[in-house]
Image (cartoon, rainbow, N blue to C red; front, side, top):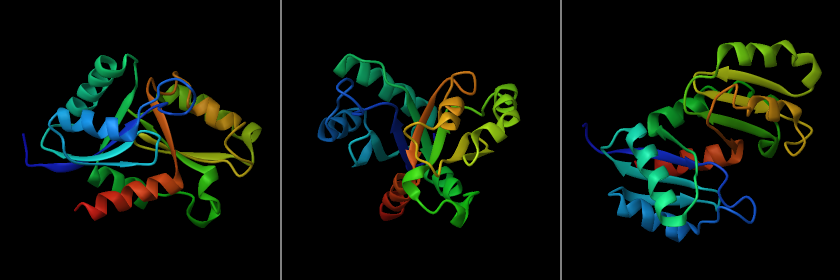
Length: 185
C-alpha cells in the first residue's frame, strides 16, 4: 500500500430519476465510514473526491458493497486517481470544437472498451454526424452538438458490448472535479 492520494469516485445513475436516491451528506457519511478521508462531493449526481492509500479497485468495490448494504440498491462505481483525471482533461481531443460543455461528455469505463464493439460503432460514424467520439484508454470523449438527450452515438457507446460499466460526466463536471482535486492537493 502506498501513501494517501486523492481518488475520484463516480457513481452511475444516482439521483437521475425517482429511484437510486442518495443525499450527498449521506454519501459523505458512508464514504467516511469506509475509512476514506477528506471526503468532498460535487453536485447531486454521485461525484466524490476522497483521500486514501487504498487502491482504486478496492475503493470501487467497497463503495459498491456499502451502497448496496446501506441503501439497498446496486450501483456501478468507477474510480480514477487524481493523476488519471488530470490526464483525462489534458487529452481533450475536441478542444474548442466542443464549444458547449453541456453537450460534450466523457464516458468513464472500468476497463478499456471492447475493440470489436468500438470498431463497429466507428464503422457507422457517418450515421452519427455531426456527433463524434474519440477513444483514449478507459475514456470515450463524445461530442454531441445537437444535445445528449436523444444522442444515438451516446447510446451506442454506452452499450454493455463496448464496456460492462460506463458512467458519463459532461465536460463542465469533469473540469469541476479536476478543480476539486486541485483544491485538495
